[in-house]
Length: 250
Image (tube, rainbow, N blue to C red; front, side, top):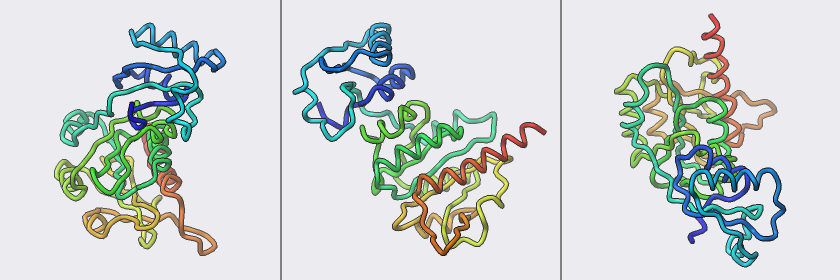
């Protein structure tokens, strides 16, 4: 079993079982684990869905000691990435939002970003096929199962993906610390928009900044201008949600 073809931890495995959009081959449960409500729920859901679960010795978990598996590991099929064209075809009736990640290399950041996007109602996440962390078991764990509730779109070229979005009446917003406009000055509530976020060390690439309709910054205090990418994303994407909630009430 490849350690990157697993889901681990009670919450992540439970969410995957509930969502039903990941093919789970088998669930391993440590013989030493205390059978609490969460473990019982996993067993009940597995029986309901016809998924085999086994109680195994501690040695089966040795390859995964680096992970906080809590005595629960599910063997899964690789994640099914969505094509951008299929995503666009499915989103016709309302204004939608996407997050585009340009060079995010840390699994913990990607997991946190996925969790934030699900909480904020983002409709999908676009990642490049190269020079960006892909979905793995650490991402799965950090997302607390949120990975099962949002489409992940893989693009061979982010520039081409941005152009496709623009051709389909989407507006592109990029985050950059040197921008003139603040993120809250943009009106997000009456358009389809994609927010591009770059890695801390490099930011959004020049080609993507040039292709963007808006480039925005988060104003910083005390001459300290570096936020973790997942934290920066949260500030911008929840401002967009705030605007949409207010518009819906009018």
